[in-house]
Length: 246
Image (cartoon, one colour):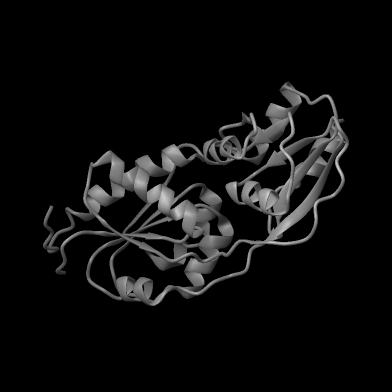
């Protein structure tokens, strides 16, 4: 193999991908070439339901925060979020969020430990795993849901296809089962592939790709993903027979 630096292929929506790349570049631990090719789009849609004066909101992605703002949603006092990235987006939008720093199950437990004074509204996309609204309602916390953004599937960019058919190792972080499934369906390259998955369920979607390295993060968080990606980028620079330059 010949090349200069390993490639980091980001398949998240562009804003999230760019933020992740900037965080890795800021760490200055290993040089890499980023390629951004979102596989799932984000399009605000629908209308927001009326909310009572004491109502609160639940966001399970930064995309939900952005779509809520695009649809004219007002900032409310009570706001629960799933993790750090969503919390950052919510703060930027003017909320004071409580973060579960985990997954949907952790979010439900957070809300049960620190219950709201009024009903909740889960603002989500067309594709979501785990019925948060129904689970909370069954456990005594009145919760509705509203689908406020669509998530259309996208194709790999020409640059991404070229990277996957090149000689430099390609590190691919995967953050959701749906994006992992999409990547597995589109992948047709010969480049050495190294995959970082946020969960075992995500890894199962790409197991047939026979990557030369697979990592499942210790926690479902952006920080854990960054740490694992840096680990694989460092490993990629040491692959036998591949010329690399720092």
